[in-house]
Image (tube, rainbow, N blue to C red):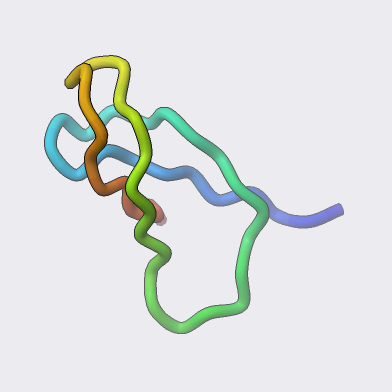
Length: 47
């Protein structure tokens, strides 16, 4: 079973998405839709 990482919105901080964990050294950042901001924003991997 893979470990999950949580993606949080960079603007409002809400944790909207989860993805399988990567073995990267830097944090994952994706542009996703945020229901709280009602627009597409950058979502970054949280610790």
